[in-house]
Length: 224
Image 1 (tube, rainbow, N blue to C red):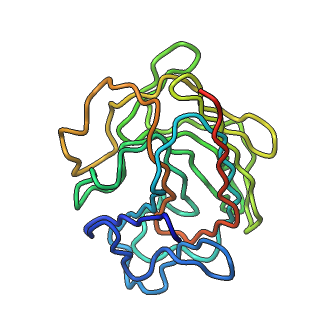
Image 2 (cartoon, rainbow, N blue to C red):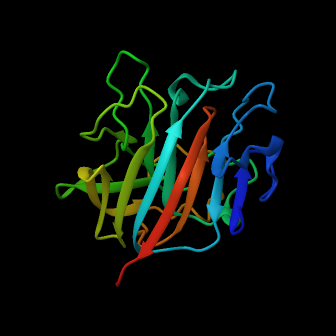
């Protein structure tokens, strides 16, 4: 976990509450076996460096059972945050960083629950030349019902293009990420600059009440 810093709602930066983020059997793991109740303790583990133009590859699997007290929408739900504000600029009780989220979603055994969706905590994007203010936009992607490994690539070209790619297929793409909108609480108002274009930022992995493991997190910088 060298180079990574956890920030959990209600706790100071680098306070890894109840050992939420850990390495087990070579996997970066989000686990809640030390919790009695989730109690809105949303967490993110940030890499130390910010990036602008890159190809990100993540292989993840959603495992086990959701911790008691986790919200219904967070069942088999996690993600990676891009173009994020720094962890140092988050409020103590802030739940999500102002960022772009590539959502990791698992199936419930019956319904379609595509993964690779876009969510926008404190941000908006353009799609097909139009401003989109909806918080989550579904990707044209498969549903993974079990605990299988899923390979997700994300192509990021500053604020010109972000594309989510699953097993080689582009499932959603958008442009011009910018600060704005809702779905973030207890933030520092000086950071929420409506309309500010996001061409770079930090990367973080989520803790949203359902255990998840990562066996690959690779990043290749691209030319500007």
